[in-house]
Image 1 (cartoon, one colour):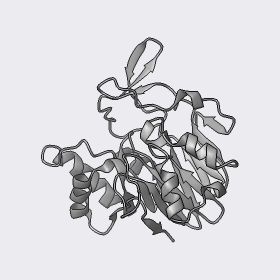
Image 2 (image 1 turned 180 degrees about the vertical axis):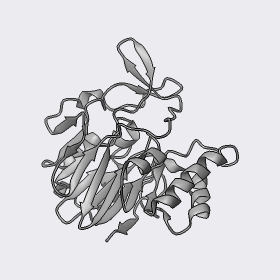
Image 3 (image 1 turned 90 degrees about the vertical axis):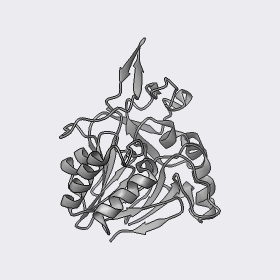
Length: 260
C-alpha cells in the first residue's frame, strides 16, 4: 500500500502547503482519496507529482470541517466516477470557539455521489468506514460547536469517521483529526499502523506534558507504527518522537510512504 500526502501543513519544495489534509492511497484493489484539504491545492500538488485523480475509484470524508472538505467541489469537477462516503451529519453547521464557521460548503449537500452513513459500513474485503461509539477517556471539544436549530451545542464529533484498510494480514487505520481522542482510537481498534492527524497542536508541550505522556504511553504499548501530520503540531510531534522513537513518523505534503 502506498500513501501520498497531497495536502498538509508542511510541504516539500514546490508544493502548496496549507492547514488541511488530503491523502492519496493506492491499495491492491483501489485508488482512494481520503479527505480533500482546505482548498483545491491538493489537485495542483497531485498534478506536480504525476497522480491522476480522475482515476480515483472511491473517496472518504473524515468529518465536516473545512480543512478536510474544502476541496470537495474541486474533486467532483476532476473526478466523475468515485462515490464519496461520509457521515450523515457532516453538513451540519460547525463553528470554532470564536463562533466562526468552519464547516463545509452547504450548497454541495445532496450531491448524487455522496453516500451518507450513520454506522459502520463494510465496503468490501479490503475497506471499512467506521465510527467510534465507545470511549475510554473523555474527548476535548476545544470550544468547537455545532448549531442545531437555534442553539449551539458543544461538539461530540458524531460526524467523525475513520477508514480501516486490510491488506493480507495487516490492518491500517486512517484518521483525519482524531477529534474523539487518539487514546480512544488505540483502545478501540487493532491496527499495525495508523496514519493521520492527532489533534495535539493546541497542547502546550510545557503545560500539557502529562497529556502528551499519556498518549506516548498508549502509542508505545500498542506495538503499531504511527505516521502523523496536519493537526498534531510540530513541537508536539517532536515531543512524541523523543519519547517513542522509531515508531513515530511525520508525513508532509509530497511525502509517500509504503506499507507492506
